[in-house]
Length: 385
Ligand SMILES: [Zn+2]
Image 1 (cartoon, rainbow, N blue to C red):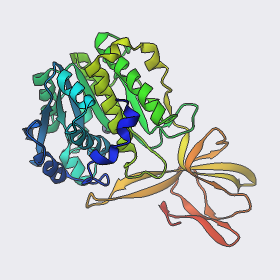
Image 2: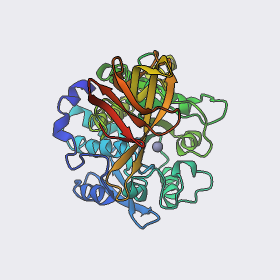
Image 3: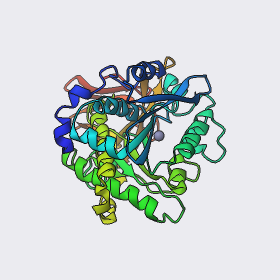
């Protein structure tokens, strides 16, 4: 069954208990408890703060696939997509049968529950787990490393979120999804292990590009010796990185999770059917690259110091202390000719009056007024209107 027709029924298997990015460990646990017996849930260990980290095993096939999500606590999209996948795998259809007959999945949702609690990238030791492969000082990193060693999977899905400021080369659209077969050495060599990951990604792109055209890019290809994906690739697991970026009017990533789920599913179909063996690495390298040509906010035709300029404004998203929401801090990130750029929100300052100062690299602190109406206002980096 083609991915686009599966997505027509997405609402029937979307996990409705998760409605934004701020769900916690207890929410995931209560969903794992509801899984039927075909899903074997096993506690692998605990986080710094004693929260269980669990693996879910499913499927009766020979090809082993490890999936892990949210090793960065504020990157929740992969976990939502995995919970959607659990629901989908309980349906009775030919796609589920194909995966069940050919794959054995080991899925670790929410590797970093303490980070999720605070909605931070890092764990409770303030360490980035995905830079801890070599020293393995974090209990969460130890658990993930051990899980791969014990299971020895053929394929791995490394599930992350990226900044919403990545765009897709030549499209000026947000990179809603990015894919990568991480390198296992500085020379970015390609062996059979990495090539298989590239071929699966080429299959995923072929499917998803039809559903989400111009919104999928290839993530930055640079070797990171401390990262898990790079080291799993080196250890013999064909590893596929998926990154969720931005999408218009989707701060909570409820649209993106659907495409993210579809990416994982199309990867699993490619692996289960061995379709990837018919792919070519050229099709992987033909995926457009990620670049940074979009802003969160852009103002065009603004007269500043007697010249007409465009202004690019971005926000940093910071968690509130309860970990249940964020605040955005806006700053001026570019001034000048931005004619090759785009933004989530674009304003035309023709016939507008500027009150306040626009200073490069400083917090946004101004008002844009048209015919006595404020159309955009910031106070010390906070968006007012
Ligand atoms: Zn990440």
